[in-house]
Each structure stands twice: as C-alpha cells, then as structure tokens.
Length: 95
Image (cartoon, rainbow, N blue to C red; front, side, top):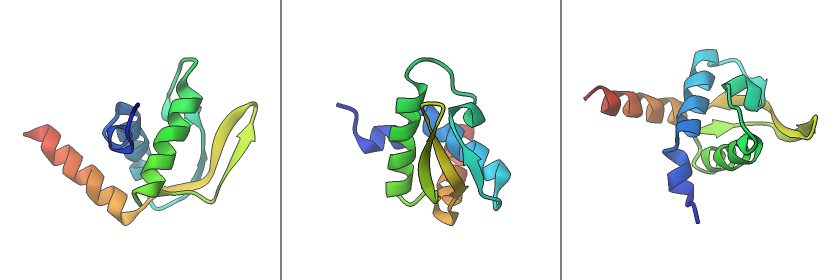
C-alpha cells in the first residue's frame, strides 16, 4: 500500500506544488485539468496527493466539491511551508 510519504514525493505532488507556487499567493479552484493530469486514475491520485499535502501542511484548500464527477479543490494555495519544501526539492534536483 502506498504511504503518505510516497505521495509527498510523487511526480503529481511536485506538479501540484510547482503550479500552486506559480499562482502564489492567489488561491485558485483547481482540479486534475489545472495540473495537466490525464488518464483514468488522475482524479483518485490527485485526491490522495492533495490530502497528503494538506495533512503535511504544504497546501491548504477551503473545501472539496464534485464537479462533473471529479474532485475540485476550492481556493487551493501553497503554504509557506509548502513553498519552502518546494525550494528544497528544487535545490536537491539541481545537485
């Protein structure tokens, strides 16, 4: 079974953090399309990743609503801790 730590280090988590950092500090309503995710499992994977990121304090969102049978995260934003974690990931990648 995939652990929350695995989700935090996944490509989807990185994509979410990168995109939310670009929009920082403005909150946005986001779904799988906002992050360029495709495929049949994208909604389920995004839901699990967003939950893990929120539990870790890296992102915040007001609510999850369902639109067209897919989760949409209302007013999602990267936190200061999330931005710092993203910067650490980028430094690690550049080594």
